[in-house]
Image (cartoon, rainbow, N blue to C red; front, side, top):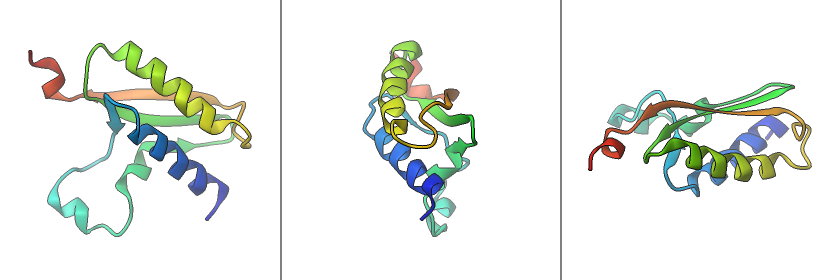
Length: 101
């Protein structure tokens, strides 16, 4: 594994433990289950100066969710070559269930 792939796995593991958010993946259909890798990795982009994670909000309001996630994910970057990189959480969608009373 490369440092980027290990970081991606650590970020996704942390994200999975945060209630109210999930990784934004391109497909949740049954066909996606036939792919031999974790599609969630497509929600993470790591460059030299920016770590971007695309998420779907499963709850509202969104700002408290992203604050908690930002703190947890920032901790994952500590001690890595991306420790000083900008961390971007991009909410790409809101689950319809989050908007129903």
